[in-house]
Image 1 (cartoon, rainbow, N blue to C red):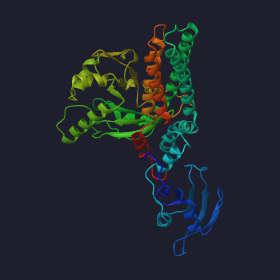
Image 2 (image 1 turned 135 degrees about the vertical axis):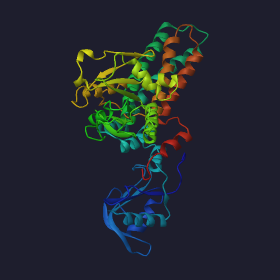
Image 3 (image 1 turned 180 degrees about the vertical axis):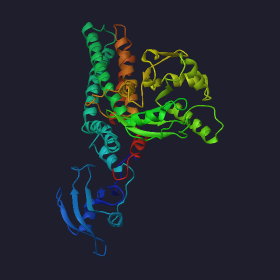
Length: 466
């Protein structure tokens, strides 16, 4: 979908199943004609009509509210008509069939929002924010999506682009008069504006990174030897008894996941089977799945029973990791994102706890807890947020996606280059190209410069009816 079809689209805009209201949405040049055919009169724009909905034989198939929005004063910028009937599967399907019989076609996923974008009603950031608002997994994520939808993210990008344009004007002038010496004032202006732009970009990137965490969250795997208290830890972090806890080693034989929120940060916690050599084929499969969870997690909580583990603990960790069958490179990659959790501290002398852990050149953070007594759990929660630089007070951040972060970081590299190279002997052509590329990266974020393939990828992930 990369252009606006000159046809009329329709879709059910409410979830399937029974509900209070069922909505069929129509957008396109034939909306008014279809509206008149179904309700029997020409609707007044922006007026709620309570009326009967008729089929081709003039039989009543539903009754409810009819709304007509005349373009360009509508969400899509086109004429829009909505039928709001009762929320039952069959009643909504009857309304949809009637609209289709009148000549509309079923909308593709995200096509209503795409038409709004292509008609200039919203930019690409705002379009993506609609999907992010629907999918928000926490209150903070929803509020951040609303800020992006209202244009806060876009406005800051536009401000940054304006700064780049101002710098480009100075650089292009330097190129035009390259046979003359560049005066010190011009050079100073270029450097100062570059610093100003870089500071603004750093500020935007910081907010965007927080928003990306709100959207994507993090996955945390809990692993360790049997009976170390992994399932108890899951229950404490989830604040409910999700996992079976017994004194029998090997109770957990499959992975168990739970979604929690830490001050708005979505976290998927995965409890795994105890890592050990076993002849039980079921437990062997559990260990195999545990390995997969450990490899794929953003953070690994490696749990040991502090009342039974030897000191130093490094040999025990090495022995445990060797059971995974992973290569040295894979183990090093895992250790770079591992936290050592010493459980059952209520059973040991606090003075005997390990202050640190150094293994294979990696210094693992050490968190001491008692899952049973709920000691140190809050410290562990704070630690997990710190691992991804999540700020609990990020009320002013805005939802961002990986493509936004990539574009911002690419533009930042260009600005860093300009600050460094903008001297009296600067290669002005090269600076101009770096500025052009940085501006292009920023324009990709808002959709001022984008490809048809990117649009297709973005809107195809929307639900039908949006």
